[in-house]
Image (tube, rainbow, N blue to C red; front, side):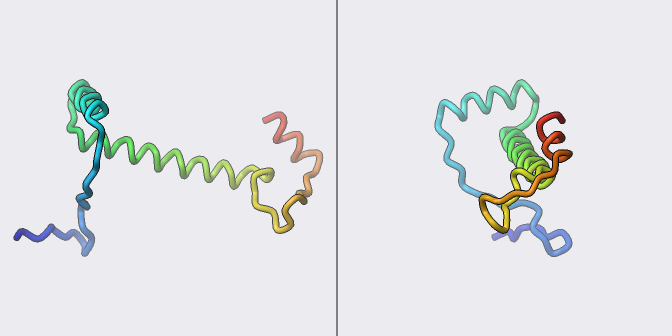
Length: 89
């Protein structure tokens, strides 16, 4: 058996089984052909975009005091300045 190549002690890639319905796989292959990339590359792009969107949403959530988990649920102290910033960005 060939062992996976290691780079700095970390595996380059991890293989996972992925069940994709036939109709979606056909669309995926067509899209990959139009973009001149492999299906694997297209799936990785989608995963990376999803992860990037999640991290951006978390950053926005942290910057918005109205969405923070309060120490005392139901209580949130907001000044008029903060309220105006939320209403009028």
